[in-house]
Image (cartoon, rainbow, N blue to C red):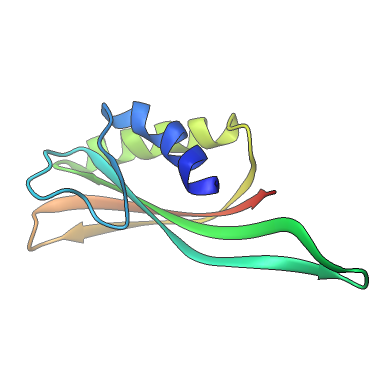
Length: 113
């Protein structure tokens, strides 16, 4: 499953603090949260294939902007050498005022079987 493969790529970047959908309460930054935005099965004239295109959002949270950028760079590097085919679609910077954390949000298109 692509979520397991994604966890294996991301967890080492933040000492295991990589979570699907929501970080564990009181997790110390930096950490990563990823979620599947949409997954599309591709069909052919012969029927459904096992090829999936999944759009994933990967959010990096850190106390400082520099730290968030550093972890985001590590995500980009790790994704570029991942065993699954992927393409970065976009990247945005945010500040989460309530949590007092910087966030870098990276969107990827992942192809898998």
